[in-house]
Length: 536
Image (cartoon, rainbow, N blue to C red; front, side, top):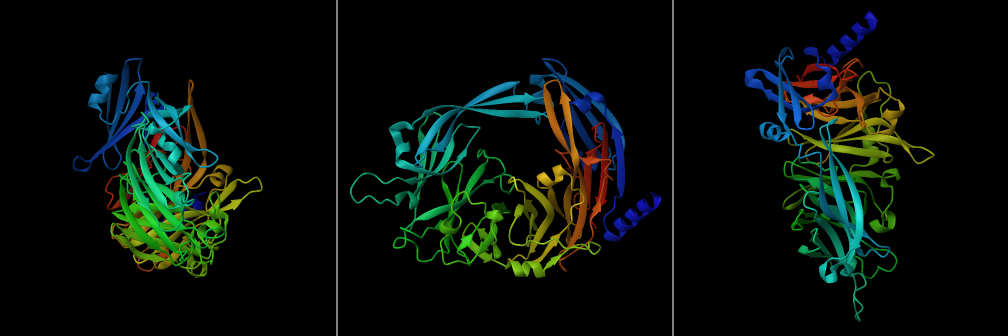
């Protein structure tokens, strides 16, 4: 056991990843039964505050604030008990608005012929003292029609619902009327963005048209606030990003755009105003867009692609599992507010020649052009582009087993510099069934990035009365990428599988230019764990 520990320590030192500070502290049982509501860091005062929240009775809420210095030495415990209304006034981050409240809203669906159909819905928000937020349930009510019966005019292409206002943003195509000479392809050419409010009024209509029939190839909700793709379906603080591809094939040959690679990017604000429309000429006719992200004012669109004489709708009709198809290249585009800056499509063969792993890892996991799920994009130093993801296997029952994490490394001009792969340490059923957590953090000298892969040891069920929540037992495995050389070192795990990252706050923003501060706890949650890793 001692020899193994020394070997692990030596491996960590050689790899450049080790903890300079590590500490633990045991919180009260009441705090452990509550939730971590807020983290406050005051670096000039050498102060870290963790505030846990519990319900005292039907009128009162209790706060326990644990104070540490920035080397995680305990300094003080402050307790506070207040009525709900006073608590919200004092602690602005305390989001409690009552045990339950409801919002009336509109939901959108399409009937069998694609016609826009509206339904009322009732959203109920119920506060959970167990995890510190509102659980949302949605009840669909009766079908309704927009005022002036405008719904019958449109074919539904996409929707995004605003759960805060009750409005819905819809992307629709104009349905052909019964008049002689009406254009049967109008719904594929004449598009509109509409806002319909909960009173069924169409409050904003913005039209955008094409000369040739189009397929809405992909749509993503893109957050305004955190510069990323938004994983929720709520557009209250987001925009809707769309990629259109020319349609062709049977019945459309005379009407089709002569160039099947003449894609278009459209971004629609949550009030239906068109923020951007840009031509997106691609080197490949077929492009399965995995994601659209905005980072520092730039938009990145990426996914697998291949050359073909056919149009996108002939190869990837709606509902196609594109991540299970075999592809020839991986295509990435960068746009600013004026339009396309560049687009690049390195081949799968190039990916394989540039695959690498840490020096002691015997096999090199690689992207093969299929069965790959992307997991986000990070831009380092304003120009180095990293796309993280994970390979998977398809089971006979249709489920997926996720395997090796993979990361693509592009230059600021879209040239593929390398792809990195790591064999996952944990291979239990939970680790296989869910994509792993991944993140990137820039090194102190700006010459490298640390790739953090979350290893899933298991899950713990926490239950109190009728409430239950699940805590993933996750520990960090860290490898460093050299930006200039485009190489990766060995990975080093932290926590020794005794301590696990806090699922809500896995990292503390302390001395971020010089270190990564891990934050976690034991399996039962009662003992806190802190670890600081220098980012040399």
